[in-house]
Image (cartoon, rainbow, N blue to C red; front, top):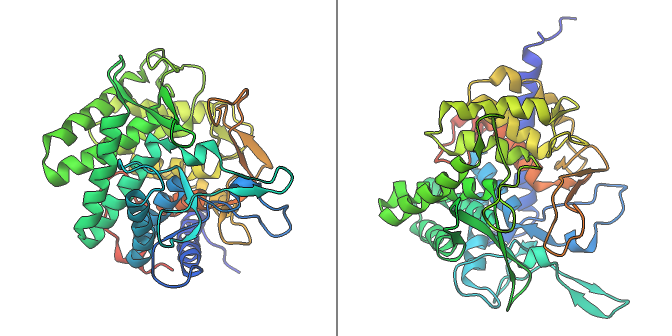
Length: 409
């Protein structure tokens, strides 16, 4: 029996990854009855696994939902993407406390009901108390920017002005609330904890400023308003200041003083995203690919941190997309079967094939250790990045669906 040529195997895996990923995302949306606004649950317990930790049982992270919405656009399912976009709009307009244009980091998964958008939380029988997670109730700059990017992408597909106006409202909050002129000037991390006195995160993140740049730059292109060009220049200037030419890498950002570079950790997203988010990036920034290959490779894919302790599915999808968009598709080809192998019985991709991998980062200011982990759980964000990679869809800039992508499922 004839067998497929080796070069055809990665191509077939990529096509299968796209088709199955799109089908999974549309099934996730269809599982919420009706056509109204919704948030998708970020993590699921795989069959046979223990139940999710209380903080994750009903959590729909804004970042994951923004990615899923953009991936649905890449699949050609605009109406499904609009359900998530409408939920972001509604959440921004109806918060239980804030009225300044910010979003929370997570909302309760499922359809949106009347009144303020519900937040995740859980009841503890032992203490007879309702608990909410400090990160989920807070507001991270990068998450607000991703929500804006998703709304701008839906505006590009639908021409509904409300999405553009809400994206501008979100980014106005970023520009007014978290800009720090301390050198290197840029946008700080956001806020941690619940109202009325959340703790301001005074560190600055390379990844957050990449996200903010992309949203500000998109708004500047659409509106021609000088304020967005100024804000985009601020974010881009910070990212440029994080480039370390001698080592060919981006540092992760600054420490809590907003000034001292945090040179210890290396994060894959901060390493790769500038290459596709900033269109006029200096050619030397592409050396970051070599850094990622030297320091983040593991098990045929990529890990979150340098010298990783396991494969990070989401980051492997990011790498596959960046490699393609920077002219290195051959290097991306071996990643398609690896990504496809992470498909769980739910259809969502596992966040990692390992039981747990570490990022080297902390969840919040009260953390005493590096307690930010990814677990062997079906993950909406990982699935969305795999779809974006298979579709060659850059989430940082306007895209239009190709008919082959739109009909792939």
